[in-house]
Image (cartoon, rainbow, N blue to C red; front, side, top):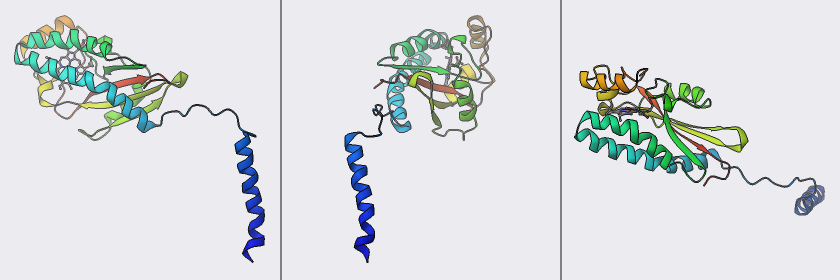
Length: 194
Ligand code: HEC
């Protein structure tokens, strides 16, 4: 007989529903934390203008002189990162083999970069991590392509090498080949970041 045996379960369900409705046994619910997919979406949206800006400015500078292009990277890259850090999201670039000490990794990025560097070359490798104070971190791999070799490759032209040596005495970002892991675009999101 189905009905009598179902009755206790229905009672239980009814009392659970009532308890939930009354808030019995529940602490005040925290605002829902964005899930990893949402953090990824927000971080990628914040990084898009930084990437576009770098691409556009480096592209037009390379069409002129290499000196000018190095200037763009040195001066404009940090400016663009600052300009696009807004609404509770901070963005930047970093690397394991660094050129500029100004791009040194925040501590959370160190193990994340180790994992991303082991991803298949050219893949859309990215990672979301939990940081203190409810903040979230996002990083995505940057892979070396042919245009990068002028300033990051094994056979950097003498004039470029000279310029880089003047400006970055401890340059560790040379000797790359196409497809190598170059570093990351990263973002840090405050708990209320949109
Ligand atoms: C005209 C020379 C030049 C070219 C071409 C170039 N870079 Fe750079 N790159 C630089 C300089 C200079 C810096 C240091 C920027 C700074 O001071 O913040 C840099 C810094 C970086 C950084 C930040 C981490 C670090 O080591 O300081 C990344 C990541 C990077 N470059 C990736 C690339 C990639 C990927 C390409 C090709 C798409 C590329 N670069 C092409 C000159 C260049």
